[in-house]
Length: 270
Length: 275
Image (cartoon, rainbow over all chains, first blue to last red):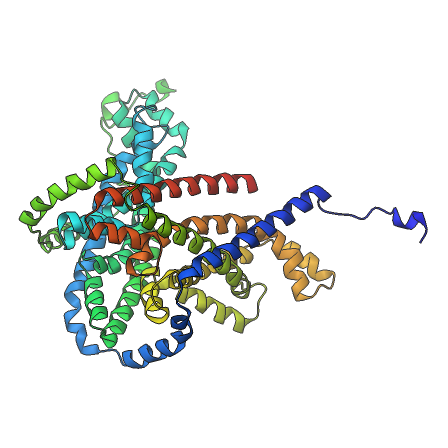
């Protein structure tokens, strides 16, 4: 052990302080995790949790085979579900387009008042899930398709609005300038300079949202907003597990179909 | 130049310009799609029957709700709200951590460039199942299995996180720079060393960003799965609405919006800092 040997510098990626800070961060995350686990499971009834395998096996045995004859009663709610998603997407995008133009910093008419207002609408719509919108609207409008359509539309506004205003902000300035140089009015600049640039993004975003909306509209019925979820709710209430299984399979098939349709449309337009 | 071609006069030039169609070039297809869309709209809107008297009745309730939203009542149900919020927040955090930890081996297994074929098939199918079942349906099933409460919610969100992070991690690993992997492999590294020295440094920054983003999503979802009995603030909101306590409901919604805005800001800030 000569002093020369110990003083050979060893390569380290971080300084000791940085290393210590990273360790402290990980320690903090672990401590928070443990504390959260404690807090979360305080009111858990563990006997139910230990029973879960039996409960699962019991429900599985009772739900097999799916009750195929119930299918006759599902076509009409399925059609309703597709309508909720499609009409809701149409309404939502129709409302989102003007909002996006108000929110984009390069097209907004007033930076001080309208832009923050539009941004707040977009954030509020995005942070409330469509199921919560449906819950509110059912208590206001009564159960039915209309509440579902408006719930889907309200949730879509934020999604489409946010992505669209980001697309508008990324448009090429040169094209806008070229149109401006011809003496075009404000509306003509939007129509010929900006709109053609964001149109492919707009189609992609709307079709993507439609796909998500199909997923979400299948469960809106749980709170009474129409569609196949209402059948799911009533089957669950009756503990008719073969019907529940059939509905879940149908929802899965619908979701896979809509995903395939939306990805092929998006490939064709982009 | 214009003097070189005197044969064309100004009158020969087209005086007007029509923009070419933006999306569909063929005229027939444009008409076919337009009429199909119109027919669908007529049939679709026709199938929505609205009970207008019920809507008119509801308007009064709607105005009360808006009043409740503008004058939120935080105090009356504060005990329920704080308990629901606590459940939501703890559920969000634990499920994100657990989900990310489980999805790391699954994501690594589902990356074609570093995993054997059998692992690829298995892990990709786990991801596909997790992604195609939406949270609410999983929550309904898990509440039936595990009983009401935050534990079922925790499992639901963990399950959903696995599909999300697993897929993005696997795609990210597949897009890794192959030269770095080859360089480490050329030193004679074992598979574990390959993953930890060639792949991990490339995907780590994006993984942290995605985990923070998922934390944000999980909070939003935790506000929803409570409606079917999986604990959290969603259950509190459902109770408030079914009691027609719009003041408390407005307060809960405002809290949700505030937390989502805050976490969105924090996560975008953090992702910017990691880049």
